[in-house]
Image 1 (cartoon, helix red, strand yellow):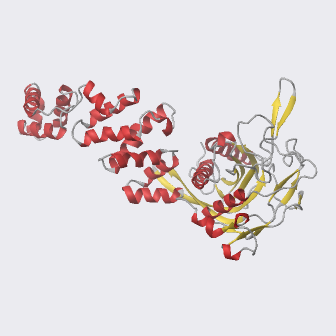
Image 2 (cartoon, rainbow, N blue to C red):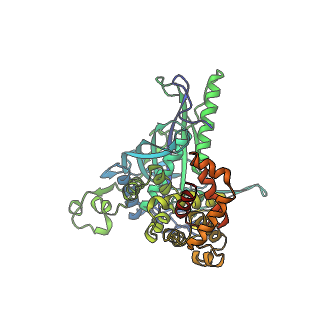
Image 3 (cartoon, rainbow, N blue to C red):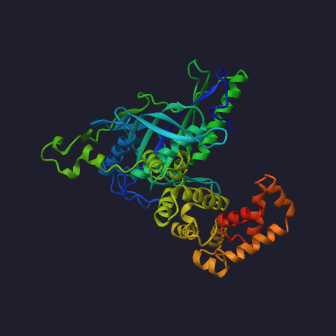
Length: 491
């Protein structure tokens, strides 16, 4: 796989910019009262305006405007107090009006920054933090969907999606490979989900990405770019971009020329002002809104700012500061859906320290989830169940090895509790010191060579004797007590 750090300074390098189309999380569409639904029957959520019948006019959805403003604030954008709508004329069979209402000339938000992280280094365990400039955020309509029936050689049109509100987030070409682009998109997805402005389900088309890709040698002008469109997962995005970078490198190194296949943003290509919508005004405070206008009809920046939630970057920082965990662990907790909530729920319920909990969550829990291709929400072991296992270990009722065994049993039989499994399988700690002394003496007597090695100064051999004692007790003996007894008997 092509990686950003793989190349020498004189080599060709990739240049990547992104356009993200985020479907606004709203009950109704951008300019009509039609409901928004993913799996509704075809053409069942279509108003007269969506179908572009004569005489219908757009009515702007305030929720969509507030969503764009909130997203802009979260991305450190400048919110334009006045923005405009345009018509972009082009023919699509699933675009009934023959044009799309968008914001090309004066969008609602400009000049922002997205800070994102990915795991780098040789072992892929170092958090690398970078940023990408946000050129603009614009409101626009989504198109319908064309459904191609190859069997009957026909195309069917579903207009349920036509007119759904979109935010187009345009990123400057500040990235250099698929890994960076995928990390930036994932961070954007997390931010939108935290804000509630977009559900961000890429499989359902709620977040779609176009990538502009070119290559050049550092210090030279940028190369001719191509566009990779409608990518529906972060993994596919990384693969598509890296493939395109390698393809362009091969073309240029073979003496060829890269063809320009990107969509132009030139304002002369079919844009005109939208005559049926007035300028979109955003006000700093209620006091600056025009007199006589109902509060429900205006968007006020200070009110939107108050509703901003904790964003992913602050979550990671809080996790490190609150629990003393490593930055790379906080990165994984936030980036894996539901993992941070799971971790914090366990910490709340257990006597074990956060560092111990993070080890269990990152190793035991995630290991089984990845092995069986499950999400955190599908885990058969709840945070409370894991907390019970850790509490049994903290209370000295089971050993660390038995705790892992109980965890495995809980995974197989989620209906049982940790206490039930310990009782049924007799996994509790052996508290009879006389019995432990007897077992230790038995191990010492049957391994004279190892005892002699310990007495000669090779203390590491003691670990082997400890392992033999634990084998005899099926891991149920207190390792601290066992070590103390063995040290006494081999001294």
